[in-house]
Each structure stands twice: as C-alpha cells, then as structure tokens.
Image 1 (cartoon, helix red, strand yellow):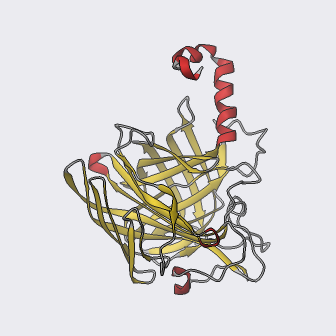
Image 2 (cartoon, rainbow, N blue to C red):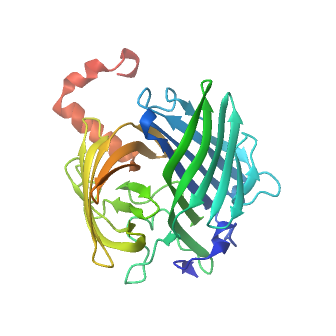
Image 3 (cartoon, rainbow, N blue to C red):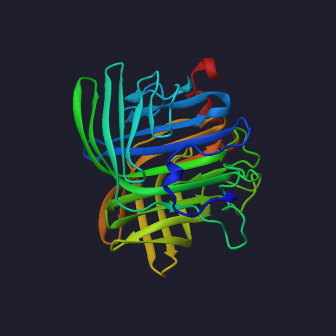
Length: 350
C-alpha cells in the first residue's frame, strides 16, 4: 500500500502492522498561553511490537529551557501499553489519558501527577492535510528517513489545524488555555537510528479557523559534511496554507533562520507559494525555548513564536531539530573559533 494521502477516519485507530519492532503509532499536539510566554505539548507514540508507549506532557516558559529546569517535564519513555488501549482511547500509568469524541473532529486529554493537572479539548478547525507523495511517487524529501515504506502495509503522516481549550494547573495556579493548535499524526516503522543525519524546521501558526499554515523545511540540498547549519536557506518540501478559510498544499518555498551562538533560532523569514498560486510571507520572533531530546539522537528546540503574516500578528510555534551529530559538529566549530568558551564551562564538564 505504501504512503497514504487520502483522508480516512480509520487512520485515527491503530493500523495493521508489520513485524518491525520500530512500528510506531504517534501523535503530537502543542498548546500555548502567549500572555504568559508559556508553551506546552502532549506527545506520545505506541510501539506495539515492543509493548511500549512513550508519552507525557511538558510545559515551559522563558524561566527554564532544559528538561530539568523547565516548568514541568513529564514525558515518560518506558511505559507498558495498557490492555485495551487504542490510539486515542487510553489511560496510562503516568495518568495521561486520551478520549476521542469524534474521529478527526474532537479529542480530550487529561493528566494529573505531581501537582500538575491538564484538562484540554482539541477541536478541529480544518480537515487533515496528508503529507502527499512527490510527483515521482517517492516519499516527501526529508520525511522518508522518519517513516519507512513497509510492503503491503499502509504508512502515513498528516497535520491538522485546530484549537485547544481548557485548563492547566501548575505550581498551585490554574491557567486558562485557548489557542490555535496543531495535531500531528503518523504511523509506520520509525527507526531510532536515522540513516541520513537530519536537520529541519517545523514551524506553524493558526491565527484563526480561517487563517494559518504549517511547513516542513528539511535541509535536503547540503550533505552533513557540507552543512554549516548557520546562515543556510532551507527548502520547504511540504505544508499547508489556510487563507480566507481555504486550505491548499504548499508546493515550494524557503526558510531563512537567524541563529544564536549556540544554534537556537532567534528569528526566521518564510516565503512560500501554494498550489493555488497564493504567496505566504511570514516573519517570526522566538520568545522561548525548550531543548527537548525527542529521540535517541535528536535535539529539538521547541519554541513559542510571535509571527507576522497576512497583515496580522499571531502566536504559533516552531520545532527546529537536528541530530546530536550535527550539534557536536556545530559546537566544535564554535570552540575552534573561540577557545575561550571552554572557560565558560563548569570544570567538571571540560
């Protein structure tokens, strides 16, 4: 069957799968409270052939950007799959729960642990946008190392615009959440060891039910050895653009990021065109960061971003990720240029 690019509510359930131990059923949702400079996520993936689920929330603002000093980090990496669990119908041992009210329309998420409570409902504002095949019939560049084709089994990935509403309780305070929110869904063999070192951006913003966008811009033009990381222009390989309530596939574009000395994105400029010929120009200023080790060898800078596009200011997010191999190369270059950086490190890590 290969890659799916047809909207199907059956994709909200576990799929028939191969025997690959890395077969994954995953979903990711982000939320934000811009007036508090606060961001959070609920992310989980099932690996049924391992009887493993990796799942949980994280919450951060600009007071701490590491998993050990952010507002809260509850992403557990070694949980057993409960009996009878389904993709959007479960309660895990770490208290994370999900309940699908209507496929591809509404989902409720809960969490109650260590004084942190989450009660959020995600509601769709647009139909899913499936990551389509290229004109040659191959997987989209940059995603094919994440999800492998597997014989007669369906594999796929899509994004969906929606809205998160509800509350979170943290450090004794109850905070209302009402924000545009992305829902990410994928399935298929997702191996922990990415064969081709991957670096990419994953920016998005949903200002209203009639206005928003999501893009994927992997570094596909430069090899690992050629890639300087800083000062490059990435090619947008897929995405969606919602303008005046009409969603269309992004067919081309670029992303240029200005990075801080340690590689984090400070500002970025996006120029794209969709299949209807509409042009998107977006400029983003990063407001906070979480340095999230999303996979065994990938670092993800997840950020709240203030975006300007289509004559408006709105708040969205960005995930800028690279392999640890990329990051080591980048850091070693910094040390070569400025050996004095060594004196900024604690003596026990020199």
